Image (tube, rainbow, N blue to C red; front, top):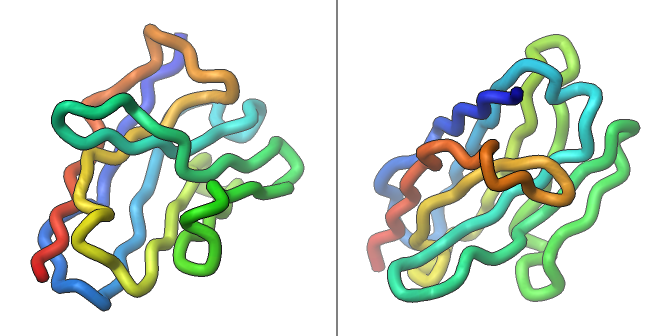
Length: 113
């Protein structure tokens, strides 16, 4: 069983930056990803990172989103630059592929225009 805890969200003005963190046991030995969800919409893929650090970002988010690992802290980070109003969502981390019992509470990111 993996317990994932997301943090780092909050309220930010459009154009700002934010770094989200996902912590949990066993993260270093799993491919991980970030997902996000807005009310009324399905959860969508944001970015993923392999065990060795190979990354992939959703096509429409490239250039502003990046994912990285901190192996020492057993965490996965999501850096978001030039935030847009439409980035407002709850951001979750999970494995690749996602496991239904690994979803945490997520962290809310709210972008003010």
